Amino acid sequence: MFFRFQGGKGVATAAGVIFALNPLLGVATLATWLIIAWFSRYSSLAAIVSAAFAPMYQLLIWEAGPTALALIIMGLLLVWRHQANIRKLLAGTESKLGQKAAAPPPGASRKHPHGTGPKAAGHSHHHPKKK
Image 1 (cartoon, rainbow, N blue to C red):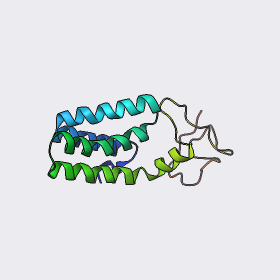
Image 2 (cartoon, one colour; image 1 turned 90 degrees about the vertical axis):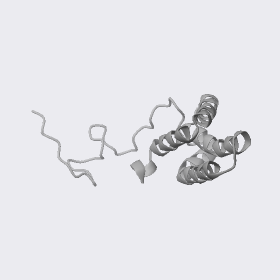
Image 3 (tube, rainbow, N blue to C red; image 1 turned 180 degrees about the vertical axis):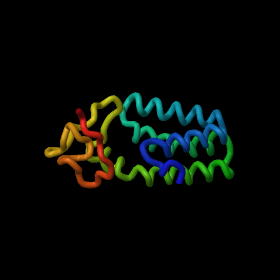
Image 4 (cartoon, rainbow, N blue to C red; image 1 turned 90 degrees about the horizontal axis):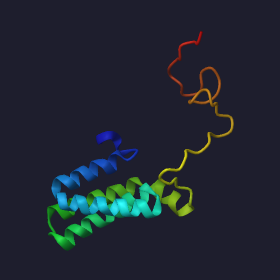
């Protein structure tokens, strides 16, 4: 699938599709995302709420038809892909917008981003030796 729908690329792709289908719907959906993100500071929550509201906007303001069906399918796909984020939101462990990244786990090397040792597990390349 396009960009494997990870790290916000799926949400950005869906937003592009919504703007292409109906620019006013795109503006309404983007406004929803901005409002939810502003007040909650959770990007994933804003994406989920926006995905739920987009088909509702389409059905209430415009028409029920192929566009509404496409929006429902995209919304369900987005919610399905955000299952881990939903669990984190419910557990209170989801990171907020502007929050610093979590500290590395104990034993992880600060010098080497892939773990510890000269060639950490799963590390397939070599770094040039420093002089």
